[in-house]
Amino acid sequence: MLRYFTAGETHGKCLTVIIEGAPAGFEVSLDKINAALSRRQRGYGRGGRMQIEKDSAEILSGVRGGVTLGSPIAMTIKNRDWENWQAVMGTEAANGERAVEFPRPGHADLAGGMKYDHHDLRNVLERASARETAARVAAGALVRQFMEPYGVELKSRVVSIGTVTDTADTAAPDLWERAAVSPVGFADAAAERAAMEYIDNIKVRGESCGGVVETVIFGLPAGLGSYAQYDRKLDARLAAAVMSVQAIKGVEIGLGFEAARRCGSEVHDEIVYDNGYRRLTNRAGGIEGGMTNGEPVVIRAAMKPIPTLYNPLHTVSVKDRREHSASVERSDVCAVPACAVVVEAAAAFEIANAFTDKFGGDCRADIDAAYHAYMERISNY
Ligand code: EPS
Image (cartoon, rainbow, N blue to C red; front, side, top):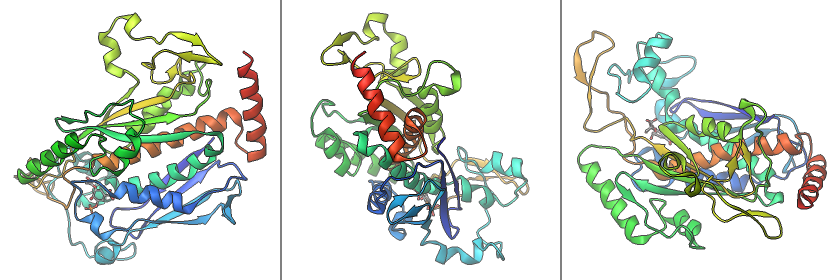
């Protein structure tokens, strides 16, 4: 089983991720990991922090000569901002400055303070911050490389920002390429301009905004995941992985909630045989009965607006319960394009987990043999 853990505070020294269960014998490119990290930093509407950081990962263990060893892989991403926070965030001595007293509605501040008995809510926000997602992006960008030799590819884009929806034709061959270079992750140029204007407008009002992101996974054979037990269902695992991303409030596979409004014939995908079993549509989003069905896996996730508002909401002090406006920390007006990269990484990890579960988790030679034998067998089915 592939697992990962992250550690690190947003203004601490660094983020750390440890990946356990990685198979041996796979080449890993640090450039690909760093490219994903830099994609996560981009996007129209991001705040001042991204001007400070230039995220890059260092691999500390589990890889030798660019090839995985089968041992735990540790990576670290430095926080450049640490330089400005050492006195506040030092692990040996901390000066107590920049204490946070006024919990932000929508953030982990209040419940986290009550749960862990923190009276300086900085102790909560430092870890709850979406800065942690940089470590997850590094993990996802590493493990997806185990599936590249088998033609598995992940793409992501932004579907909507606030009330503005991308109007691009989703069948366009350059959809993903255009979305990848857009400052808002859209493929249509007019919709892109409208989204940027929308972000400008809400920024003036001291607001933040959310949006919907989409990740599609191409090249997966039928049969990853299982219907046999609830916790082996791939859609359940993907939903949990994506829902665990900061600020995600909803996850859909394929039609998602829309399926509930349609009749059966408008939901299910008819089966044909054309050099393999295929579907005339992909409304299921590539998963039936908790398993991949050979069509692309389509995941959509809804991100809520970031809770830090420059025009802050009403709250109360956790020191003396007096009424006050919520704390204002430097933040982003819109982080939806970054969220698309994070959701892609979270999905990549779960897919790699299902892939190695199906084809073996020890080494590339075993995975190669199992993969090709399986593909041969199902091609004769
Ligand atoms: C983020 C880093 C954070 C925030 C943001 C995401 O840095 P800082 O707090 O120093 O500005 O910009 O996190 C949040 C908005 C949040 O609410 O957690 C990052 O690296 O993505």
